Amino acid sequence: MGSTGFSWKLADHPKLPKGKTVAVVVLDGWGEATPNEYNCIHKAETPCMDSLKKGAPERWRLVRAHGTAVGLPTEDDMGNSEVGHNALGAGRIFAQGAKLVDLALASGKIFEGEGFKYIKESFENGTLHLIGLLSDGGVHSRLDQLQLLLKGVSERGVKRVRVHILTDGRDVLDGSSVGFVETLENDLANLREKGVDARIASGGGRMNVTMDRYENDWNVVKRGWDAQVLGEAPYKFTNALEAVKKLRAEPKANDQYLPPFVIVDESGKPVGPIVDGDAVVTFNFRADRMTMIAKALEYENFDKFDRVRFPKIRYAGMLEYDGELKLPSHYLVSPPEIDRTSGEYLVYNGIRTFACSETVKFGHVTFFWNGNRSGYFNSELEEYVEIPSDSGITFNEQPLMKALQIAEKARDAILSGKFDQVRVNLPNGDMVGHTGDIEATVVACKAADAAVKMILDAIEQVGGIYVVTADHGNAEDMVKRDKSGKPLLGKDGKIQILTSHTLEPVPIAIGGPGLAPGVRFRNDVPTGGLANVAATVMNLHGFEAPSDYETTLVEVVDN
Ligand SMILES: O=C(O)[C@@H](CO)OP(=O)(O)O
Ligand SMILES: [Mn+2]
Ligand SMILES: [Mn+2]
Image (cartoon, rainbow, N blue to C red; front, side):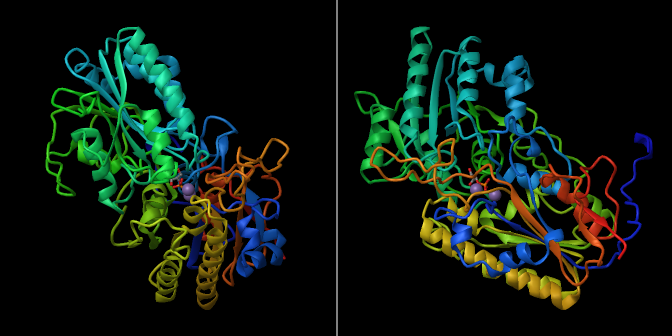
């Protein structure tokens, strides 16, 4: 069909019926790896997921969830929720933020766009502040991109730069913050030699300072605001390396949770508060954990916490973080344009949709699933339910999280008969996996499995269909390994705990009494990835997928 003939109408599937309730379950951070003592999914009792794997070999398989299969720059890039849910929902692979920023930096286009011109206006008389995650994790940001940005601004007339660092330890090993700060300090020293007054001005751990998401806890953003904008924090140091080392030792915080600190000069004055006339760039490309700070930096009217001072600045994001809200209004690189997602198609075709998770993953099954779009496509046909997450704790303290409550909501939605698709994200494997606490992660995996069971039981009752999959790996491997797969030991002789996601594939299982008997996974899509799931789900709703979607994973054989 030509572009003028575009239609939202999906063709009927030649063989599969409509009208079945389809449950789509995403286990966050649930990859498939060899069973061993660091595989928490293997260690946990997961009878439901085990039965899906063992029970129906033609209805269980693995799909790729990392690297180019989800639009990341290289095959060394682990998967993450943003790119995973984008692929699951959109049914096509889009070059993602990480890649788009790489390209814009390589071509120099980043320095020619509207966003850069806007902040450059402040270079003559103001300070440029760069706020973001300092690591090479590649999930939210990358050190080499920050380095190229620093180089670029120094070549384009910047006089004074202040970097506000957020330490990682979640996408990279805990303790690696020290090395990243050393590298950055070295780069800034080189800039100073070239006559640019460049320094680190403040910092804090990503889970404690600035990078909250989905409005789970505004205090996190406030702590960042106080340090970055007001120059106030409970800890003051004269250099960032000392700050990170000391705070890791006392109060013994890990990189993810370092308390906020500011860098002060000899007289105790903060070296880089944000003031009128300055420019600010948040250099993370990923949206979910930048949206809140973007609101604080940009919105004239703002009541989430007392900002005390609201400086008149020129602010740009690395990317536009929310296309609906047009937030922020200035940005350096245009985000991927993820259009015509499966959610939008299905709603146009009358599919009534229910989506649910708890706060920390709520935007994953809504915003990311729908191509980074907030809100409903059609509020008459959709209902999105958010279960409030606990805040102020690390999830190894509560490894059950809200899995049961999410499953109950899904069960009720399935049994109500009011929905054709019931979609959930179960956060446990991922959120607890990120704490690096193996015992707690085992408990978390068991809880997620029990939640899946409850949802599958409801599907059984209504004669529906289920699709159970995951967005990327995490809980299936909790140790850093060498190239041959052997666990690596740290200086202390202990194994190095892996808090991050992995490169592992994830399972996908289909089934349920509503699934037509001849449906099975094709064996001619061996390299299938998360982007193949959308067409698959459309088929199970009785529709053909649009022709430019990644192909379906299923076929129907005549029995
Ligand atoms: O917590 C996060 O922000 C990331 C890891 O950086 O995890 P996920 O992609 O699963 O949301
Ligand atoms: Mn995830
Ligand atoms: Mn994660």
